[in-house]
Image (cartoon, rainbow, N blue to C red):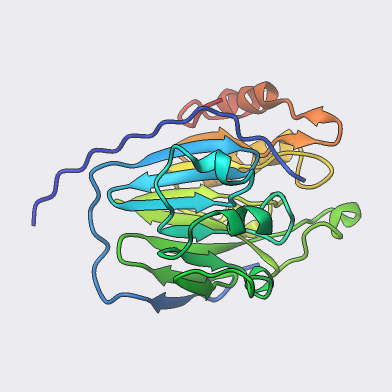
Length: 252
């Protein structure tokens, strides 16, 4: 069947931050259907690590925080995706304010264990290296963790997830809280990448740039870049990337 696809990405970069090993992939199918083509894709940053992904009838809230007021202009979520247990990613108060009666929540096991008070349509645990095929998109859980000795206490390997979404045959990567780990460097065919860069919790702009130059996404969006000493130098990040590979488009 011939399908015509129109992709629209709207980004107002207000996303600012929080705080090498192959994995075997397990593929889980929730619905036995092909991934449907979608006419429009829109990614709207809310703040910090929070974003809304909309396409056709789907509305995905990623790491929803900020309470109901942060989502007043959006449709009720069909999916909520959470990366980690920290409060700037997993905010129980916000979840309780939202109407989740028709919402499927996908999150790491460490988050799912704390969702007993949440009433939703369904809760699905997803682990590092696992893929799940939904009706209209595919989601892959990418490890996210620290490498520096002094930062190991922040994000242990295996607890949280970054994610690659496949929507309309477009691959969109959200790093979550991580450093320039091998699993990130080994990513392939990424169209849009949202990469964290903040100390002491994740990585420097130099490390983020070095990883991006290795896996070469078509477009890169710095996000999650507020650290304890203020904002990371995203201008420097852009200069490093584009000086070494002008084919990667850095969007601020």
